Image (cartoon, rainbow, N blue to C red):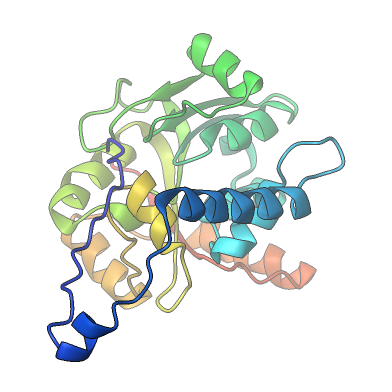
Length: 258
């Protein structure tokens, strides 16, 4: 799933009225336009820097209106631990910003974790680049077979990746994700009506996200013979309900192929 450079262009036809000819509108010089854009960027960066002098990514994501399911994964790790127990000891995360999820998983006792980043990571931090250099996180297009043997992991957790795949590719990718896990496949997806950053999506993912309903997903899972992991789903729901936590993304717990 390679990143496509967003470079939209529009052509504006000039008005053909006589008034437009007699009284042409003044046009701002390219230099003025560039200075205005740079000024806006400078103001945004100034107001959304964190205490260490770096850019506060959470604040910027709020400006875009983007709520990521990858951040939801990080917030629900404790509940996933209660639902899956020993299966959380060997986990593969697939999705954007996989380095952050893998880093948190590696801090857990007796937990081994790997990641697959489906998009370019040229803006990754030092920690992420280190994980990639060590082979803990790989950059790979998930529309093609994953570089892992069957049942290499207990769990495969996917976030912010399936929303950008058409059914044509989902037919290949989801069975592949289930193939490399021995226990379960957990999918975090956006909900219909959930706001997303349009410009950011087009430049990063090549296409806007497709928010599908739980009914659509249930039919699709049935079509490719993926069954719900009812026991794990029940434990997960009990854990989040007890804590009063309401996930912002849809979370599907599925059994791996056996």
